[in-house]
Length: 193
Figure: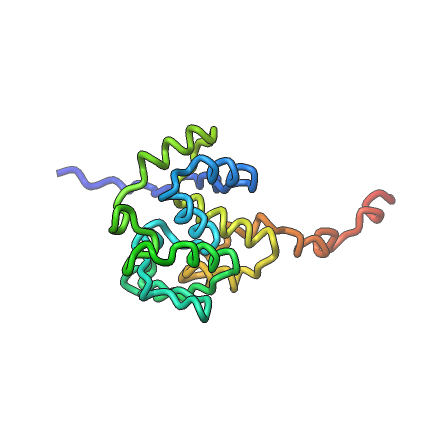
């Protein structure tokens, strides 16, 4: 029997992070059918994953405290996620009241199981490619990073377990590094000599 050869494992090259510009989001939002529009907007405003939104129950929302939560068994990282609601996210939930006693975003009286067909058609009409529902989460995190939300706060808001999982968004807000860009040499010193 031949010995098993040692093979070097090479991590596949990282793909580019896809996120939406505000213009792209407006185009997509305008093409989404009514039953997906509020769900997509809520995902974009909270960073919640698709299933966390499609299966969000009113028992997980406190409109008075402007808070929602994802139970540990519903979270990818198996840790509960507290979701502080911005005014815009709170407004989306207020619009949803009365449609179902149990589900926040019901479709024909129950939690939506699949979005692929309607989502794909909306993307085509909006002229967008390479966009998945998870792109909304990337967009949420990217916009936070670009507005200066500290990475540690973003980690907590998004329910990531480690900072390394959030670091992929840090490059979108390099402004905090500008004051270090000239260290250790100043350009004027390099020109002399």
